[in-house]
Length: 191
Image 1 (cartoon, rainbow, N blue to C red):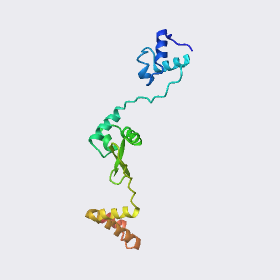
Image 2: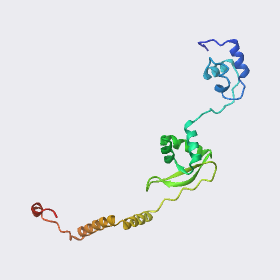
Image 3: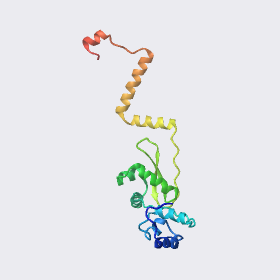
Image 4: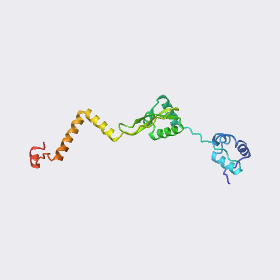
């Protein structure tokens, strides 16, 4: 296997001596071999026939999650949309982190709220361990119609518009709708 820069004896000894040390290659061996990348170190170790190292999880620092966690500790029971608006982050980034942390029980669903006025239910998360709240059942069509009727009855303007439409529809259906002659409407107006 050709290498562009030959490995020195000291580098080879350092690699063989510290190959079994615990931790990721980038953290353990790269500082000891500053001229070599992590991939180059692993390739050369395979070339030398060194045994396989145990798999260590990649160390990842997510500044987005740190900001989300800090916000959630100060403001519990928030949805992904509320968190993304407060932190000026994209909704997809916040939702991705919340789903990942919910899977490992670092956060829990403390409540469910509607997106908008009549949108679907969205989870509201709280930082820390706890029991997840169940998602509410959707309302039936009859309940939705009853809710709409109640809102229309409470608003007199909407009720008047609805009643006028109902009267027009009834007059058309029964044949009692009086239509003006087009010539008379042109001369005197349509009212």
